Amino acid sequence: MDCGHTDERRRGNGERPAGTVPITSHGHQGAHVGNTHNEQHRTGRRAAWSVALAGGLLCATAAVVGSATSAGATRPAEADRELNVAIVGNPQMEDIASLTPELFTAETGITVNYTVLEEGTLREVVTRDVGAGGEQFDVVMIGMYETPQFGVNGWLVDLTPYATADETYAVDDLIPSVRSGLSVEDAMYASPFYAESSFLMYRQDVLDEAGIEMPANPTWDEVAEIARTVDSDEMAGICLRGKPGWGDLGASFTTVLNTFGATWWSANDDGTIGEAQIDQPEFKTALEFYTGLLADAGEDDAANASFNECLAQYRDGKVAMWYDATVAAGLLEADDSPVQGMNGYAMAPVMETESSGWLWSWALAIPQNSPDPDTAWEFISWATGPEYIAAAGDLISGGWAAIPPGTRLSTYELSEYQEAAAAFADQTLAAMDAAPIDSPGTTPRPGLPGVQYVGVPEFQDVGNRCTEEFSGVIAGRTTVDDALSACQDIASQAVS
Image (cartoon, rainbow, N blue to C red; front, side, top):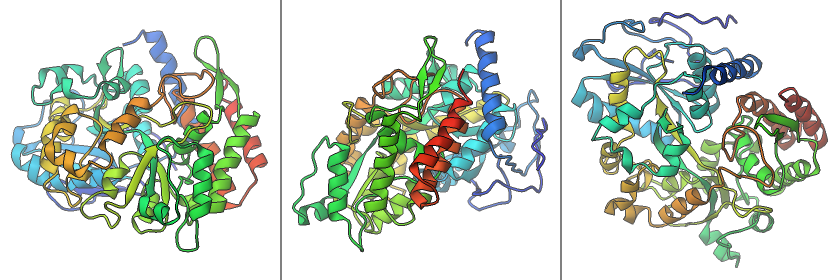
């Protein structure tokens, strides 16, 4: 397949990336869309990302419909304004896509063409397009891993001037740790739609029936013992991510890795990548623990399960526990959830560290080559501002418990949210506050801060390729030793 980039925004028929669900803010699905630091430091980052892109990204394309507007052209007339927005496919984003016609387009006249992509595909498509200077999207959804690195590279519009000048956005209302995670030297490069840590969710009624009490701050050994105790033919003991991808299996496994005293690479004195550490005993212990727990008490088809699959199995009563993102709690306690009111929540399990939960945000950013950043900001301000959060609670099927959490202090002051989220709101904030983003393990690591990832461009490729090997262990296709050997070779190729 030809992976060449075209500088011209394409409008017309085209092949969309796998997993694409195009939605327009006119309310129907359509065949569209897919669509400072010093210069030496920036150039180095750009080169590193180019290596990562060449080594690990799929060649994915998408097409859009409408009239083209090249970078630098005159801003479209008010009545003709249109945005192409790439978002991740999860319930919160599906909610905003469905509400955009009523709450945004009707008020502004701006048509929003959403491309809804599975998590891994979104990362591949957005990284390729934004990194190559493309104009496929006006707004993209990225996370805390990509945002600082893309910002350093000069690939994103600095949102700070927009945010500080926009009174309706209320920039000081953002939770400080989340804003910091999406910023570089006080320049904010993405606006958080929701933010999260990770914690343990469990069926309180199932544990009560078994006479088991979950500790508020459990160890992984305690969690594993409980999972194996309650596991049955009808209900698995625990659901853990097993689907390949640095942000799928790689996210949850890396938090386990950290707290077991292992790491992907050592760090050189200047913060660059040191020696690969996959062949160390602690890494093997962590992988044997993770894959062994899934083999003994894990969900069905664990090697293909990530957030959405575990959510479905938990809500369907097929698993008793689930370790994953805190944002899931709002979906479990939603008005339309069959397990509403049945759940307990505990801090992310630990072993050698005091805490282990991640810190993450799905956020909206404007690519540097976006032809109309003013209109793009108008959408971002609405989608990630307090106005949408306050309006969504009465309109989405999940009710107030399912509104986007973790981004704004004012969210936790809403009486409706306080009532609906009473079971998990305090635990969510505690988990986010405890996330060890600056020191996630027992040893220093390279790159920018991060918990469930290593903050270097090379991790995207290495994490994707290594989790293919680890998922193979979960599926029974390979052994722990063979997977570790292959991953050590992969990670060693990235050594500085």
